Amino acid sequence: MSDQSKTTARNRESQKLETRRRIIDAAIRVFSRDGILASATAEVAKEAGLSHGSVFAHFGTQESLISAVIEDFGESLARRLHELVASGAGTREVLGAHLRAIGEREDFYASLVVEAPLLPAGARDSLVAIQSSICFHLSPAVAAETRARKIRPMPLYLLFNTWIGLVHHYLANRALFAPGASVVERRGEELLDHFMYLISKGGRG
Amino acid sequence: MSGNPKAGMKLCISCGMPMEKPEDYPSGDRSKDYCVHCARPDGSLQSYEERAAGMAAFIVRTQGLDEEAALSTAKAMMSRLPAWKGRT
Image (cartoon, rainbow over all chains, first blue to last red; front, side, top):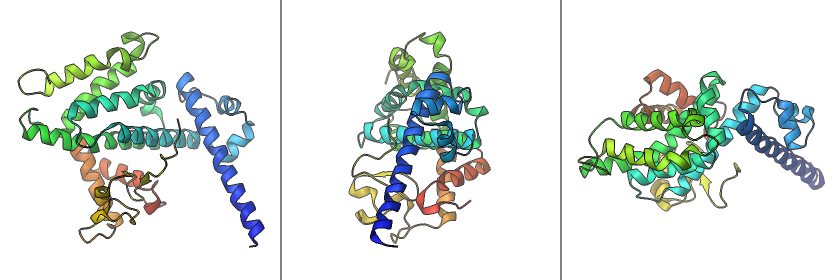
């Protein structure tokens, strides 16, 4: 291959990636607004300023678009969480960072929580991947505070699932808990206080 | 919102963990593309089966999934990562 055709191939590849990025970003906005399964790919194309055919050229089916968007979303949430958690952070700080990372993407995350059982299997795997990245930070924090007798000893998965159950319940029903507002912003601190109270030895964490 | 990594932030090719500090790398070796958790004690990359088992055990311990479900989820997560792309 000549240098010129190598450059052309590289440009074509980077243009392809750029368009893919544009479609994913547009889909995140549309899914956040209208829900994941209820959104038509035509709406995503319109939001991205592209033809419907162009969206299908990149993602052959609605399912592959949804999977790619959720995977991308999971990666970005995990990365943000990693940025927010300082090394050596305590349990409360890790959970606070978790709420903040969700809060910055609340509309999409809430749709994901509500629609997960109906979404392609890849979406469920992405949720487990997101939870794994939180647990990666949570696990050493809880272990240290359990050793220091600040947190009551309990299996980590029960501690974590109790937290997730609480947060996801508020997100799934946010129209009841914080109509027209961010439930994380409005109720997050209260949930954090309550959860720390539940797991702490001898009173409020 | 962007899926692009922060400039200079390397992601482990085997598990996707962001690698920033020297202790994130096997023996602090920043030339490696995989993290300390995916390395064997001698610094080499774990095998596909070793990594899948390790990831599944972490999911069971932290999220309480059924062992089989955790293993298939771990493999699905790994199939998206550069080191294991296409493996199932």
